[in-house]
Length: 312
Image (cartoon, helix red, strand yellow):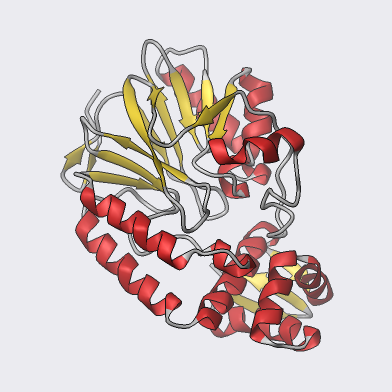
């Protein structure tokens, strides 16, 4: 089989990348003689597609077992398929160590799903990802790296021999994920800076991000990310407005279309959006009117016949 080439980098054997749309995070299928693993499992409304992708990969490579699913962090687009994959393949679920109590007790106050107005079927975990340790994924050993900022419990995975970084939402080709901790009163800006500095110190030939295509120009992407961080951190309200728009756009990707009254109801019922509303010092009605209009203004949505409709 011919090795896949990405920007001049030849992907080593035993790694398949399932590049997904923005509702589901990318999945990385890693396979070898001793282990078959999947990194991240997508959003729950796409769980059948995730199962099909894994089943097809197993068949293509003559494999019969998925040993484990590894979550870089527990946002719903990265772990929403956990329960379905566990049921279908009887595989283990591995999560960041810092999330162990939250998952064991299924504590909605500690988990992000309810806070962000998203869904994720309950799952159990069997393994913990401890920063500083290594884990066998497919035929290679990967270093587990702490990657706070977008999510302060997030990890990245680094394969030193082939200089591959699975960066999750800590680094994309043109930025990084929303700095959510800042939206509920925890630090995030400095943590993003520290994570970018960590990536900068690593010899990285290929980045497999949580969203978007894999890329090789790591220096350029870090420069873009640092510029983005400077822009957001210079104005906390700017970061808050950005976070609010991303959350509604994400939900609209799931809905595709929603009556305006239902959109406003979701906005008022989503805890992190209430935090943002208070930070921006806006009345509830003004905020519920502003947020959909902000998506329309940025050409991310349209309002027709009383419905907010997604615009690709």
